[in-house]
Amino acid sequence: MSQTANGRLLDSLIRFGSMSRAEATLDTQLARSAVGAAIADLSRLNLVKTFPAVVAPGVAGRPSPRLELNPSGGYAIALNVRAEAIEIATVDLSRNIKSYMERSVNVRELGAAEALSTIAECIRSIEAPGKSPLCGIGIALPGIVGRDNAIARNVLALDWHDVPVVSVLKQHIGSQVPITIDHDATLGALAEYSCGAGRGAGRLLYLTSEPNGLGAAMISRGRSNGSTGDHMLQAGHLSVNPSGSRCACGSRGCLELFVSGRAIENAIGGVGSGTPGEVSAKLSTFTLKERTHFLRSDCINALKIGLVSLINTLAPDRVVLAGALAPIAAHFPSILTEALAMSVVARTEPVTIVPAALNNAMLIGAAEQALRGLKNDPILVLEKSRRTGDKT
Ligand SMILES: [Zn+2]
Image (tube, rainbow, N blue to C red; front, side, top):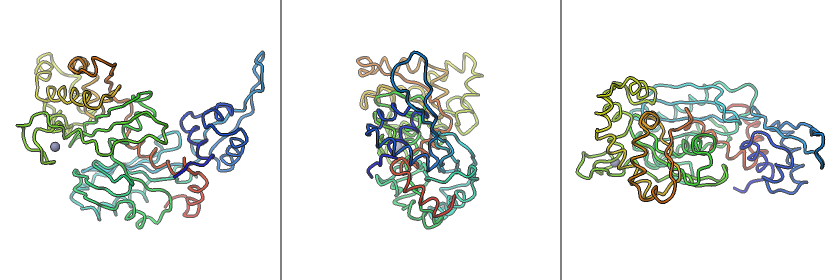
């Protein structure tokens, strides 16, 4: 879908928050008159506020008026669907989470049809932020989705295969606003790339340890509206021990068997399910003996082999470690230094490995994805939203 002039200006405002009219002209690469028309449209749609130019004493040239994004000019509903729970949030245009709820439900056991009906119910029940219009619904799924962002192709964690998620949900909720699905780790990576620990990276490798697996995504430099992740990257199934135990994917000794949240909990002697909070709490009480034992564990060995292989094959300039890997990165920086020293790519070009910065990266990424329609053509999306009412 090609981007309208209004969409280009809104895209810039969402990225920068506020800017002068001169900066907007530069960033959007539109003619001055087109920027003027776009400002008038976005003001009418309540998406931008304009402020008169402040004349600074002693500065030559005509001062430029200031533009500010109105964060509540619209919102997205974001969902993160996991095997054992559904997280749902409303997110404003400045990526702030306005309301949040989590429903514990065994999505895998429900089967796709009933799970989608539960998801529709969650969408209907989340509280809308004030009078903001709904501009899109974005859903993060733990597996491979189609390139059309509409069909769940192979989501092993939920046992969903070729499920037409978007068309079924549209029938359930009758909304005309854009609905989009994507691979959860890709959305987490997009969020870290646009406003977290991946900011400014050229090639970002994102690895997230979730209770039941390891998600991975690769993001290459691009405008926020044009960035795309690699939907097929399944780094959790990189074999680090060919004679190891059998994985659900059919291969043996996969990386995620050693560094999923639960595997990490096991390696550190914890009793939780491997959430970042549980892992962090256990690591901060570690004795010297426990530390030494953990550093020699199969988990750490596999993590190092995995990092070296992935850095050598994907050549990122930044690696963001999220989920249960984030506290490990924070508590044991020596592991990361050792992995970098073992990689020929990292010895040639600078590569940095950092812990993730965002708490709800997948929800923020899902919201960002959901707002792509709005950033392409704000008039079209807001008209559809008004026609169907503020919500559903
Ligand atoms: Zn596997």
